[in-house]
Image (cartoon, rainbow over all chains, first blue to last red; front, top):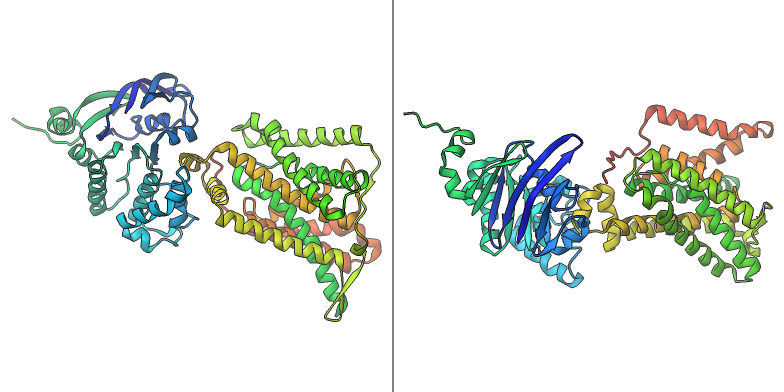
Length: 237
Length: 296
């Protein structure tokens, strides 16, 4: 579904992403894992057309995304749940969802909203509350629900577990799994290595803008590289 | 007692006009993040349109008003297309200067093509009259002014909160980038915001002319300054603040108009501004402080 070839992103003199190659196929969860500043968010921003690429090619379902405006990319069927949730705090929960669905037919919006309330009952309870007054976990649900409103073909999720309490982290990853099981395609960017690799079909590990490892989720989870460098497990003897 | 009510109506009508002017500026700043210094010229364009519709076209007054306001809205959208769109994403100072430049260019164009003599805009006869309300005589112009302002502010509020496009403008004001991630088109936001700003300026222009009489090339300058002052006092970026600031400015002007002896009337404006500076000393962010980050 998504193919990224040789992506290079520069901020002034600094090369944030150097020659990254990445694929996402239909119905997969692909994880892009790395530490802070590794180039994960930059990659997502480039896909969405928010920042320019110095070099490289991004193709989505046969469409070349280079130079395309963000609004058009969204309408091709990619939805980004941004880092830090970024819901609209001064608008109600329901208005946030309404905005998420602004690209679909007006008549489809109310049933979609009902679907979101069915999936996330708490959002339904709080539908007229200002989004800024929701708890972190609830805002995360709202952010995901908002992304789902546009009936996207692919979901990009930027560190959805960041800042969530441990119990919520778990349910967050479970949610992502069930979305995949329902047929969604997801590119998940994360710092939480263990949980991401547990649910990933495939994953890429990025350090300083370069890919240093790739493979199937479980494979990487059991690899020495990941165990030593990312999970802090050393086998002595 | 009657006199007090008349003073209050005066203050409300002047304040209301300033509030509408300020709203036009505030909406552009709140959603798009920059000041449009050619805002006054939109009023002037409305004034000229009104003049030509009435005098050359011989059209009935309220039809001419509608034409004037629509022309103002269209002019604002054109302004955005021609002057500001090529500079989109530039730093706000650049956009400010572009506004200045546009303002100067337009004023010169009016002078050259439409002549230097102020053109009196004929207002309906009944504007000079007064209506008896509960035993008190209130000027027709003042009353119409107040009603128009209230309806305009109320309608804008409904539009922003209840319509799909209005909600997307509020979202864009909050975070432009995230709004784009919903698929909201940036161009639509820019054009729509300018259109609303233009319509507000047009309405304010009609009210201004009703109180002041003629259109000239530099007509827009004073209103712009008043609008600017009102938005700063009210809190930049806040629509409620703009309205409050406008009414406060109007109220202070009327109060000092009344209090000052006639030899000191020329000091009215400096004294009003002095008071407003005092307000800013206590609340530097304005009456309603909004924390606004301009993210494009």
